[in-house]
Figure 1 (spheres, helix red, strand yellow):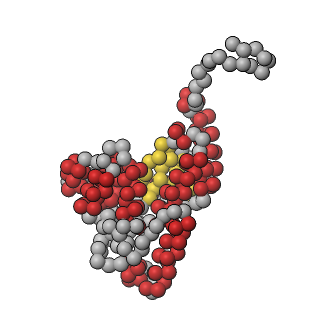
Figure 2 (cartoon, rainbow, N blue to C red):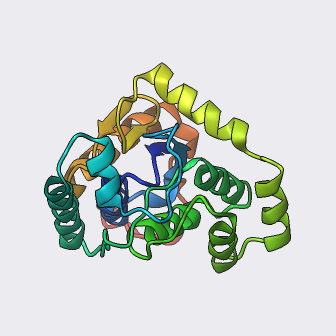
Length: 235
């Protein structure tokens, strides 16, 4: 069963949602039958990366709020993150266009490292204050998860995977995604936002039961061996 997650690297609730979903998946009996695929979404496609500006300053300048209100908002999401074991350092975070980060994630996906890439991107943005629009940052993250640096550098420089990012964004529009994180289970059930882990677990169980009915060949087989039946006969 596939779970698709539309997300943006610069979305604080996406990292929180990732962790809550992972907690649910770890508790799910059939987690080995679940395929997770990350999908690109851009909250601010026209954003110009500003490595010398604070995130609070950017919000105050562009979102119609005072600097104090911006700092309060960032403190609020930081407290939410801390409750599930994530450390946000919003004083370090910088406004950065996420398009190249999404291209990096697609490269990682093509090399079997997508989930590791997403985790590193979130950590780089929210905890380490790194510029996730910068190629040197992405190359460093790629090296940390075992991606080939030469091939990644070439992919970043020649614009590879830009079409994949745009396809994900277009698909999100087609299915009605208005905000992220947005989780789609088996293309039939959707969960919007960083819900509690128990909510994700219930949806996993419900969606998997439905999926297994439609895919009986995917149900675990039975290998017979010596056993005893309820009538007392053993063989």
